[in-house]
Image (cartoon, rainbow, N blue to C red; front, top):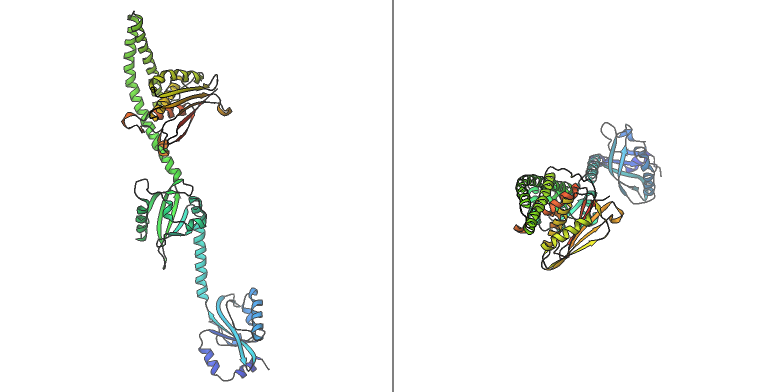
Length: 486
């Protein structure tokens, strides 16, 4: 059979099919086995259909697509089925277009005389798809590499539908675990202000759905039980099918802790000012007491009254030492220590004094682990530390119990001396332990001032030492004081 362009057109005969072809809005091409164009119903804007005749359709496709298109034509001419595909086309002037093509055989009798290509221009659709894909990729990049945690929340299904890597790190879960989790189970029952977490959360979500951009602090609970303070900003995302809320979550736990430390420093500053005022007034009282006691000591001849007067002098001088300490603390000055002090001597003396204050049901056990335990700390300061710790241990015991006062030199080979007070009392909750060194904080109601442990903290830190507390409810408390040694 003759398959030249002229013979193919002749075989297709009348003008009827050409009239139909011209009426079709899509581009229609007839090509031979090699891909040469033997008929075109229209050309792109600015061109002519006749100018396409005799040219090869393969010349208009990118090199990477030619082999596949050649194979497709071969199979069609050998009786294969019609094929549909999206094809990128490059014109001679470099312009590009996209077409949705349908290629099938043109039969005359039982022979394939040509292949017909029906091509619909989808350039605008493909550009929109590419723009959408680029926008989505850009958005995903911004989300994934954002410095904060990003989550997308479906309001109606109550679950996360998208999370970034920072969100997984923040909550301590893998991506799959976080997407499968119920966000409301990650909250404690109550927020720090005492309100129920679920009620407050829905209030903020409702505000976001109403077009607002709520920004608030929130307390979350990680998968390992740790609580983290976050700053959250919510905004509703556009969606035709779902109500989506995007949450930007920033971990402000360290900032929150810093604020707590600042508040504690402010309380300590208030304590210092109070201590300074009390010390000045108390010093005036002690001056009168010392002067009167010295006169009594000189005038009294009988041994017993003279001894009582001498006891008043000794107590007043101890009080004067405490005044000096309070003034030092109030001025934030470090006490200058000329020589190291043996903490064994301090422990023995304070044990003798405090045994009478502990009561008959509490046993004080003194454990001196080394012959000498030197520490660079002022003696009156050391005595006050031991006294306050022992009294605090006493108050923690209901009924009978024991207090262990331990002194050891060079704990663990370090240059620190250990002073340990351990009791068999009620222990502390984590909340109480967190605040135990705050000035004016007390669990004793009206019986305590809340200054004992805060004073211990101030003395130890000013001396260059550290404090370590181990406690559990119902078990008791152990407080280790490490003071710089020789």
